[in-house]
Image: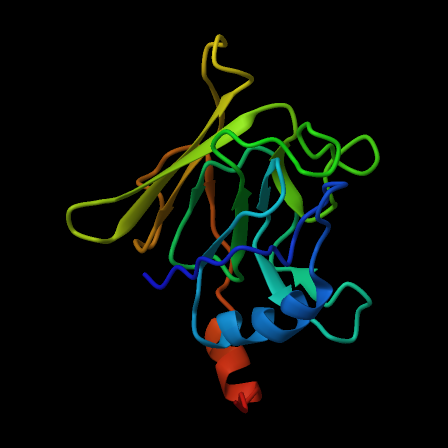
Length: 187
């Protein structure tokens, strides 16, 4: 696994710190070309997990969905195309812009968002299996120091062909190799 982690998010729909379009345009193609499956970010005071996305500079938003959007996907396998971005921030700080959580613009997170929450502090737990072939990711949400924690999101990502026959699997033809052959990155 190569899991880049950096502060500012290319995919963010909060009022305080929206998507950094320059990062999206610059990094998404590089991540796709290098087979990056998961990226972690922070910066905005809410939680978002994207659907798997691929670069597409011919579109205004510089991305396209790597699969048909489906609700409640709990497992991705080795055939999943695209990169998933998770923005989990912060573990206890309210926004400098307004002194609260960063509410989503509009009534919901962005169209690229598979799961979003703008009403809790978030703690992300990422576990790697002993054999290194699977990630288990869980986002815990807490409203304040007196509140009970809730599970905001949880899913698995496996390097196996499938998600062990579970009913909540997702598989799509991985486009990474095609994109690697079509595009040469220049640094």
